[in-house]
Amino acid sequence: MMVGKQQPAPPVCRQTREKMQDYLDQTLPKRESLAVFLHVRECGECHGHLAALQVLFEGLDHMPPVAAPDDFDARVLAAVPYETYLAMAPLRSPRVPVLLEHDSLPTWARSRSVRIVGLIAAAAALAAAATGVAAGAAAWTVAAVGCLPELSVRLQSLSRRVYVATVHRSIPR
Image 1 (cartoon, one colour):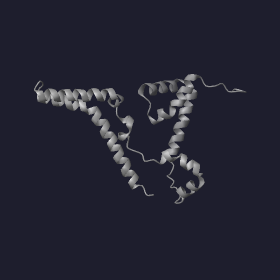
Image 2: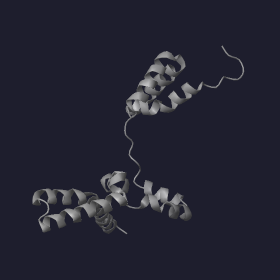
Image 3: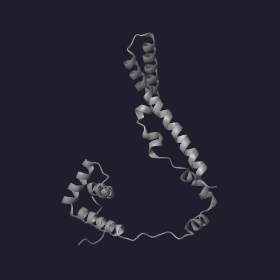
Image 4: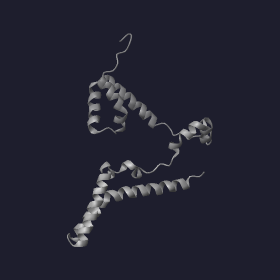
């Protein structure tokens, strides 16, 4: 038994404990999950910490759901100062589906240079088809593929605007 100050956990234990929540949620990449598993298997202290978390989460999973009181929203809004309410405006803005988020398209597809090169390739393919230099089907295929990055960015932007406008209209004021 140790008397006095407790020694800080070694770095590998600290790193393992920081990942335990994700390990239990099974959201860690395989390599990191394996590292946590192997460390916990060898380290009694981390094993105990993981076991305690498992018991806690199992207990939380078995708790009955609790409904909020009918006046919950009104009481919360009455307790929030107006300045804080204004600062929370971004949280109240309409959420859009993940597919419509700007970052859902790959970075290379959003790249201005890829979009411009694609449009140039599409224009060149259409010009080649019009002058008879290239076969029609091949030229149309190149044109379609060249337009895809620009078209996907534009369609995503348009869909986002339509979605947000629709949500704004449906929110009671």
